[in-house]
Amino acid sequence: MRWLGNRGTLWLGALMVIVLALPLVVSDPFAIDIFIRVLLFSFIGVAWNLMGGYAKQLSLGHAAYFGLGAYTSTILQIRFGVSPWIGMPAGGVVAMLASLPIGALCFRLRGPYFAIATIATAQVLMLLFLKFRDFAWGAEGTTLPNLGNAPLMMQFDAKAAYYYIALALLALGLAITYRIERSRMGFYLVAVGEDEDAAEAIGVDALQIKRNIYLVSAFLTALSGTFYVQYIYFIDPNTAFSFNISVEAALVSIVGGIGTLWGPVVGTVLLEATSALLQSWLGGSGGIQLTIYSLILIAVILWRPSGLLGAVTDIYKRIVDPDPAPVEVANRDG
Amino acid sequence: MLATVAQAVINGLLIGGIYALVSIGVTLIFGVVKIVNFAQGEFVMIGMYISFFLATRFGIDPLASLVVSMPALFVIGVALQHFLIRRVLALGDMPQIFLTFALSLLLLNVALLLFTANYRTVQTPYAEAAIHIGPLYVSVAKLIAFAVAMAVSFALWVFLHTTDLGKAMRAAAQNREVAMLMGINPERVFCVAVGVALALAGAAGSLLMPFYPAYPMVGQVFVLMAFVAVVLGTLGNVTGALIASLMMGVAESLGIQFVGADSGLIVVFLMLLVTLALRPSGLFGGWAR
Image (cartoon, rainbow over the protein chains, first blue to last red):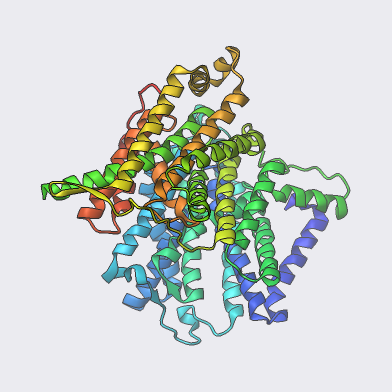
């Protein structure tokens, strides 16, 4: 947090208090729903960012892990009566196991090849789950049994509970990213992301680095899948393995700034706020939201390809913290 | 049994011709400009809507509307290269992939706003016509589409191998720096390459219109196929993309016939993953372009 300066720590504290108090002050369910979406997609973005941002492995198939997390906890709950609190990390482990063969296959490829191969893996999983009719309800999907207020089964009457779970997930994702960023692993990651061959040449085992970060990224993404199913009480292959999940994960990170701790959060807040405002102004007519998303994305790529976080911190420095403190992380996303 | 297999192979080859037009476009852009165009499917969609509106407003046959859709998309392609792609060429993989990806999202959703998600079809006198050869039948509309697709692909091959501009494109694809030293203007070559690639997508759209409905998401079907084909056929390799597209059409069709109606894509994607595992550079890695 040094880059924020001393006053920055205060601001961060204030932000945390606001975020924690938000559901106590705001009771409008529509607003809470937007907050939950912001937290959830920030978290998915943070998970993607470890892989796509730091190691610069552009995955467009993270829906694979979202879906595996969602299905693991749901199957455990409905077939075996296991609480989603256990199903959630179990889904994470399943996703980690799945990431090993997927990684072994895809890491042979670079750049656009890698992106295309990851799309294919998520699609294959979706098509397989469409086939698993007896075991996983096939194309119709299933609704989760509504148990009323059952905290032990991750079901709550109060929307605020979901808010705090999503917030805890995001905090977990940010803490892990923060630790990795400052570890030896983090420097290896950035080296691999900058130039894989050069990193190999100085003795970094690029394949192992990519495999390790993929494990972490897949685990975290799977947690979000379980949470999402618990929140909407429904699962089917098209929701769980939706290409839109893969896209959104990458999109929020790119708009905010890849390879930065707060980039995915900034990106999600901007995109979700825009989409919420649009919905209230224009109604939810099909297409308008993604039209605006894609225009924002094109604008960001053309004018600020390193993401908007840089722009936000620039403004912050100009207004709040004008003294020229030494800046060490400003160009991390290079 | 044999007849069933033969029928599936014929159906697969016919649709494979359309896949070929889309994937040759993707591979051409990648070969020359070194960018993967995720929006290629949306240009097929635009081609389809051009043909649809020409057919419903002016009664022009979709096949005849090729002469409108191909030049129109060529111009769009030149503009795309000049105003968008050119600006990200120096930026690396990530912004490039996301630029074309964002473009795909934009076109798809603008189409959704303008035309709604409804399926649009065009009635032609030859829509139901078929040629019967023993136990096999061949749809005339699909046969025409296949024949024109092959003719267009061949014309592209002739263009790339006999004209100065075509040779310049191949030279730029093989080694951009040396090509520039030889006096080739890369920007001009890039504009033509993207223009031609989009014209191929437009052709695919018009050829599909007699037997395939137009809707905003239609491009996704073809772009996924095209990606698999260009990876199988080695990115940047035009002949490889053509052969791989035909193979995939057949694989998909056999998958639908023998595994189940919703299994065509599984077979195709598994083909991709197995190929990547065994030969990461594609089936035609060593071929000249």
